[in-house]
Length: 207
Ligand SMILES: [Fe+2]
Image (cartoon, rainbow, N blue to C red):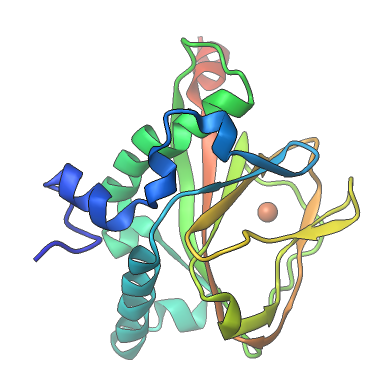
């Protein structure tokens, strides 16, 4: 049976785990600008989020990775291959559309991890920039499962979260969007955070 970790049958995987609204040919219609250069769009189905959280909960019993730290890399989870395919087909087109990227730019996935916050593991992330060109934040939890959290952006004095489970917020990661993470007030909140890198620039600097 297909799972979030088995993406050999990519059409079947996307049918089950990619949000039906993410298929839209007209990405512009799906992009909602929720702050200055901060965009929201649909990405994963609720099924994807539920399976991932269920897996993390079982993993908690065998390792301390998600309890000792409040994050675990998708590499360690075995989710990188599926995420990379989702990035190419369903994430990059939105980034490309909104930021009007040049057609010869080549983007890659940097550090990508699941974060877990609750009343024991509170966020203490003060104002910072990310090591990314663009940062993605996918909400994996049901909004009824927690209160609080979200990304606070200094430039607009606003806390922003994806509106629903499986939806993503994207914002420039360095220089322009200084941000902090608001603490969880109750419940448990899981997010998938992904740092996207513009390899075109990196490769030019290396030359
Ligand atoms: Fe950040």
